[in-house]
Length: 149
Length: 149
DNA sequence: ATACATTAAATGTCGCAACATTGGTTCCAA
DNA sequence: TTGGAACCAATGTTGCGACATTTAATGTAT
Image 1 (cartoon, helix red, strand yellow):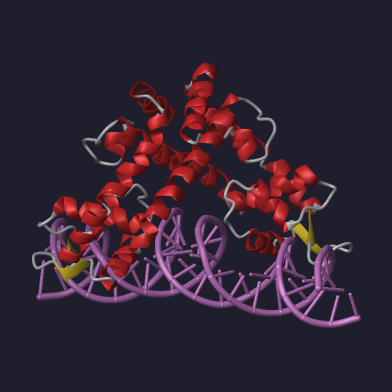
Image 2: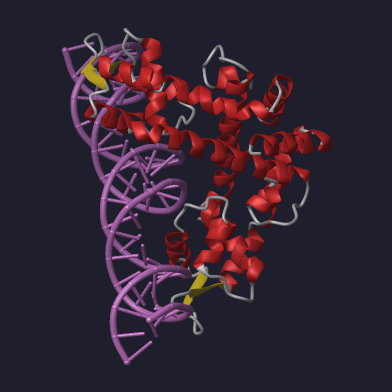
């Protein structure tokens, strides 16, 4: 659907305002679809992303700092997201022996298994972009990179 | 900066995954900048957007339903956002005489004045997209529209 | 007129973003 | 060696997104 219809706004001040709104609106649209896909598994997107980072480290532990560095949203509260995952026994927390300020966070077998079950979800969502050609997708990334220069 | 560096991820599965992440990441980047610009005025982005809708209706009132329809995020809680604006005397709430289920919400003079003061902020941020040419911005919108088809 | 469905807004709950502050640990320099 | 800076995680607070439920008003069909 055209952006104008989605947000009931007839006109935009210029192509920049329209593009700005479109980036924000489309991101929300994508995130909502993805979140809905993970919901049946009791996982929120931030939780899923943390689990993925932990799997990437596995079997080495990660610290909260490392999670923050790797998360899309650097100002989020990794500590409290880990709380939720720990409550679900998807990760373990243990004070780092070599530096008692840090905390070693590890994904559990249950966490790994949950990631296995949801393996295809994110990929399936990416396919949502398949009404773009490969070239268009690449072009889109280039334009977005340019915005943030 | 290139996306790979921003999120410390070296490789992407394919151009679709990369584009997906890039849309989400860039939207966050844009929103964060915009929110920071409004912060000195004590306005959050949702609050600002509601005020804009109310100005668009002014001097006619809007209902909560109308706000929801026009907001980018349709699942947000317009009712509570109006609470915050009302507490700051930027809007008024009054039971609609012709339909006592509905509530007439109006922007106050103070609300209009605040919008005047922040007039240039959103435009200024759109300029952030000015390292795109007009054609590129239009192209970006087209690609995003295509994703949501 | 009364029962029932529908509608509008408000409220409750949970999880996250943003930001400030705290508490404990380690590092380092005087 | 000790006092302060730097560091890491946790915690507190506010506001929003998502979703379910509630309360009140209105519409409607009998």
